[in-house]
Image 1: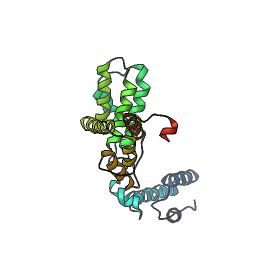
Image 2: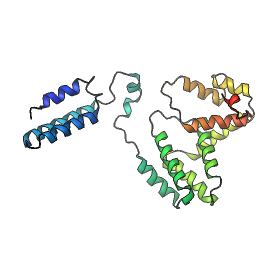
Image 3: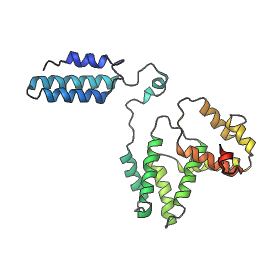
Image 4: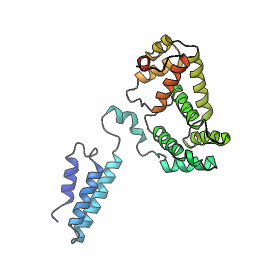
Length: 239
């Protein structure tokens, strides 16, 4: 009952800038004091009122920290981000077919994990990533009973993620064509940023972006590139 709005504000301000304090910790504290003061209606109202004001202040100042990361991505604060549920709903509407029971869990994982990659502010698509996701889809859906439905699954996945399938296929094709005529030495130089190949451009872009985000599709794309070059997938060669 002795808990006051001044104390709550002091607790928040005492953790760094007050903006970077843990919101969930504040909520737990509010719930704790609210439960302690269940016999005092006035105290409960004071805690509830001040916690609402504090949360509003935190939201208003999100993304203004004096850090490189905040300066680069601060403009995205408050932006509408599609939820996993929304992506699944769009995928289902696009597909218009029931997924084969044997493939249902796999397709669910594909939609969920791809969504989490694409909505990340650090995500940037490139030709290696495009080659990787197409390689993954080809391998996973190669033996799908209905070929036309398998093709619709791929299209529905891209559409539900807001990705242009034609652009992804064009990027992947360009990377494969380059790799088919490249040598191991060409790949090694490209990965160091030497030359004017698409892979070299991607490598240089990654080097210049400390916040670049790796995903499994990028890794699969690199493996597919090495396969096209003719490098044996032996651990002594790969590592």
